[in-house]
Length: 269
View (cartoon, rainbow, N blue to C red):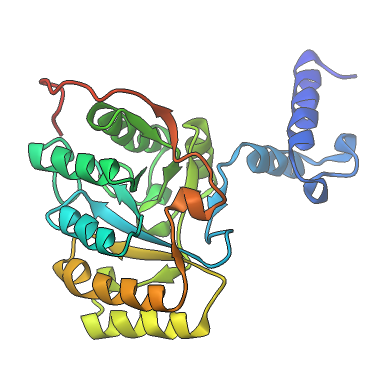
């Protein structure tokens, strides 16, 4: 005999199952085991994870770990190639996001048409955090960007590209999709300029349908040497530069767009 709680759970399973692609639906919900039911819920409530672009012949250049010293230099170099990029920023990693310099850097990048995404607050590995800690890491960065730019990002990138089922659930609860990458310039793991350029050249010569490239704005060599090389080589190969939202088919880059706040005592890390 079904209890009220079991009826509610069964109704929930049915609702969640209907939201899944046909290939992922169980043939008969009443035959689900406990593990299968929990798996179904996780699939239906987890944030989507994008590992590559969906639009042919696009390249989405992304820059992590800022805002930092060379952010505006990167924006100026991108402008020379009429290229748009995406910056996944932290709240308090290399520097506090609320400094006047970083406010100006973010505003300059946003006003130039670049996409601003979240890289969460302190660059902590999601798989080591509780759900409460994950929520704090995500929402503190969102709050900062709402204050500085008036926007809440629709996309979040996990530090180290590391995530698990719990973190995808929290991201979904926060309304955000998760973005990783299919190309790594290697700058954050010690690659020299020549090694990064070789990595770009090798990939370009293979000419994949699209490229979702990981770079870091916190390295002077990335900003001043690798980026100009990559832009020139990618342009010569016929790729179209796009933000992450654009390379995924024109998705909305932000969940909300409003007016920036006035600086006050709360702008602190």
